[in-house]
Length: 189
Image 1 (cartoon, rainbow, N blue to C red):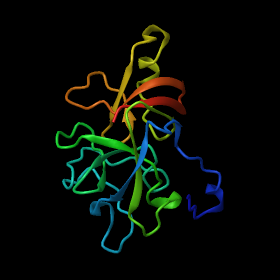
Image 2: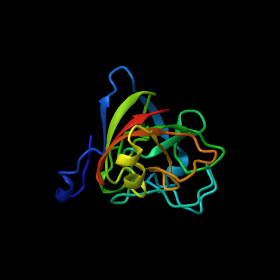
Image 3: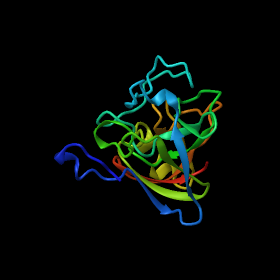
């Protein structure tokens, strides 16, 4: 449940919407890694200077001070959910965050339990800014019709396309880039 703290946030939409997920996807129950909480229990965003639990090269993407649904999650110790850090060799994508975490749109409050959507062959609609649109228009064009566009965990935790994948794991394939603010994906993890 969205818990907006300001009236002007009451029309905020969910950024991840399951389209074909009834039998294909599962909202996995996880909890926030302790690195995402300050000592007073407040939300702490992953920063580029972090080395634990993952070494990061960029700050995690934030909207209104918090993480957005659709952020790529990797599994930490036990059932801990950690924001992906791009091509970090120690991390394998686990799924997509289902909740707003921290900031003005926080779903959690003082709870640490989050949902992580996972399940190969499930189809989701993502609304901006849950994905990085840089390069998607060029990758998804009439010239490449029928060629799958692989999406990976970007350094800020959002889905992105890359010129070369390197050793990264494919998180999703792009089914359709409806516009710069909406895409349809096939989840691969």
